[in-house]
Length: 240
Ligand SMILES: Nc1ncnc2c1ncn2[C@@H]1O[C@H](COP(=O)(O)OP(=O)(O)O)[C@@H](O)[C@H]1O
Ligand SMILES: [Mg+2]
Image: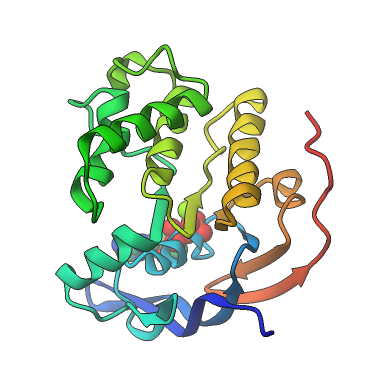
């Protein structure tokens, strides 16, 4: 049986007008990702990684080309339909966490559930949010506001939030970038665990070659183009 493709990227270009100049950020990207694969996106700063990830999530519109998530072409959908597909399909972990400052950790994790779950039952969502916060080691911090949490703790809240709707795809932009080694390997462990247990497809932007070593596949961008795309056995054990 052929592998099921969950992400397909076709001829993706992104340009931005900067005054009278047009800056070309992505110059034709094509790849597809089968279900359950863990892909690391690498490349130096400015190579287009965050732009690509934003397009994969439907947070941004390409200049040309398209992104298909589970067979649906998302890039030019009207915002209401896009929001529905995104809510059901993608969990996103931003480099800068993007927690809502006026909500507690628990309320932040619950928010996408309240906005998107088809079967939104507050009790079910609440149980799941609590369990996820337990899983990321924040069982005793649920009522804290973001400002009362360290960077590592905020990142773990963002991670729990990305998983609240049990998305088939999780996209993460340097999720360990601002963390120390211990917190970084904890976050990686959580991602790998969800990838294994729930078959979640992971696309992770990272600078860290050690972290990328745990991926099934490494796609390297340079100046808006894929310059290398290689698969390998993932490192068997997480070394701390
Ligand atoms: N809104 C924007 N306006 C102008 N240039 C941008 C904008 N967003 C990104 N860029 C430029 O596009 C390039 C790629 O950015 P980005 O995708 O953030 O790279 P990376 O995540 O790999 O560091 C950079 O040169 C950046 O300065
Ligand atoms: Mg970036």
